[in-house]
Image 1 (cartoon, helix red, strand yellow):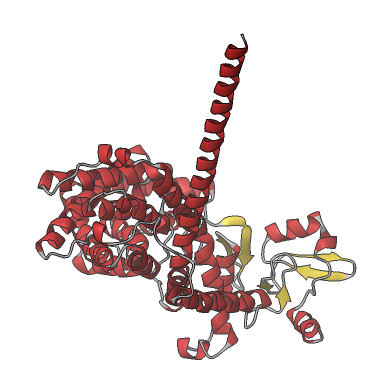
Image 2 (tube, helix red, strand yellow):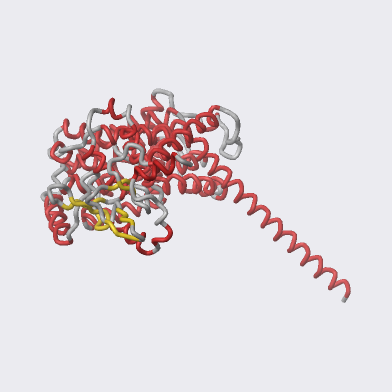
Length: 486
């Protein structure tokens, strides 16, 4: 009996040791996944910030007036302009789709609004910098050259397969539905305006904006004078850039951070046999085609959009996926399931299915073409030649560290300019969010002071707890005077 008890005790002890070992391995895995995810983010941080700054400059100083009219026909010239407009826009997948909807509703040709959406998520500066840093120049070359080829192939495919009157009927139905529901478009970005971000112009027209940032952009444009050289020599010009920078970052930060963290967990916890089962190995055309198709399919179900799919692509590349599959995956952020659901809400099932089919075919085909072309020139990168994600040291005193210091300093400067309202139009300061406002903005009186707000939303927030905000000076002059005395 005692021997049986001893054996049972040993078994329990052994089971406890095994369980503790598994727990320690799991903890180690979690820590390693976080190290890789944040390491990727640290490596690319300066590129993201610099790219967003350049994008903000372009957004503020490159006019987009009459864009829909310019993109109203299916000519090559309009297609080129749609691509350029897209490349000058933000990198948020949902933002690109919403702006594309506005262009489409106002008369943009189907080819041009599809090209605009693709260019605004795949041909932008910050994405290119991230690709160079995390994947290499070969992937950037394939992204840019392949992007142009993809747009050209999309144009041909749409002209050949476009169902007669499908999009015209949808355009009319979309305009009628928005009018019936009282949907107003943001005059600065084309996205749907909201009641809480409304203002009345001097002409008595009520405009609605999608966010505080876009409403502030409108005020800047209305109050702006001089050209961009003069602007950049004044606080007002830098305030415009700071406001746009804040808007750009607010649209993409969830995708970026989520993509980096997901990539770390994929690299650590997805075993190699999964990649081997999903992707064929070898050097035949069949393997290249299968990798391109599978890369696009994984993108659809990945739920990772915008720039967040670049670190995910690093995980795929590290798993042994072919060049074609990785490139096709990066292209396909406009056909993830959440984005497809937005198409369905905007245009209906038929148009959603058509956009999915066109983009899926062209993205997989272009990934296939890129590997064939790069292989012919002998510039397909060699995966075996570099360090794996787990072997890399991410946090060191190298060029990344110093570039990040500069980038974080720039972010701090732009944040300070925005929060202090340096050079912003309007003499009143919203006590809730800090934005400047004018005489015609929503207002309320509390404790003998009149406070003005950028929107009804901020006014409601103030009224829900005025004691939290009443210490803020109602005018900019008073706020600056108080600041100078501290």
